[in-house]
Image 1 (tube, one colour):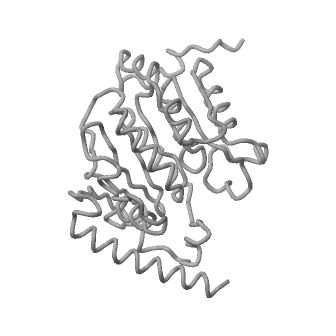
Image 2: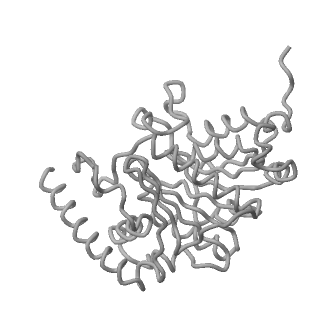
Image 3: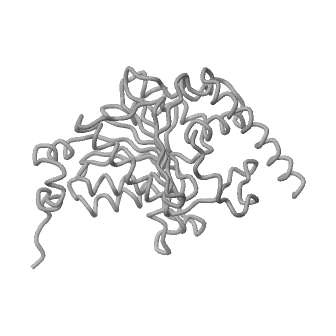
Length: 296
């Protein structure tokens, strides 16, 4: 006979790395995740296995074969199905007691107050090229005093930044303002990974196409992102351990066998090293766009 679900038994192997009281704290913790694709879906599943008990999940997209290389919910059986519904079902399969609210229209300016309302943490799972609503979501987190973390899958590694209440905000760090999307893309990439550990082993540059909002990805990086994001979530939710906040960050690249603690005081606009990196990145992007237009 199969035993009925028991929260304490399901997550008992976490005990030791967390206390029983901390596990109960995770049980009542409330997390919002936008984007159920490459990283967002595996964030939800990872945090569910950590024992987090309440989720707001947002995505408007459906699964297709092009998602198979990296997205945890993408399988033959889920082709054409809404990502947010598939991931919500996976979380419920792990923890039938989980309190889940889905936002099948994705995150919008109109539903941001509901999406973030009552949440203890926001975890960014939006696609790299989603600029407008990402900017508004992080601004809302800052206004509402909600900790937020973003982890970027880069090559075969990952880089993270945390934005905590009372500390440097997303806007102060990246300096997006009303800039064109191409400039936001450069500033986002340069700001996420100042160490640029991933740049040395891209074997086919033609796979990067900013005009089509397309770039290469690996499950290696996505899985690393999940571990990094979950570790940050655990420390933030349990108020335990040192949490690096922007302008501090970290990039880990197992392919390069390197781990770097990054620090860019002043962010993209007020740090001379970052200003130079942004200028170089802008020229590199312009070259990629010219090559793309010539190829087409």
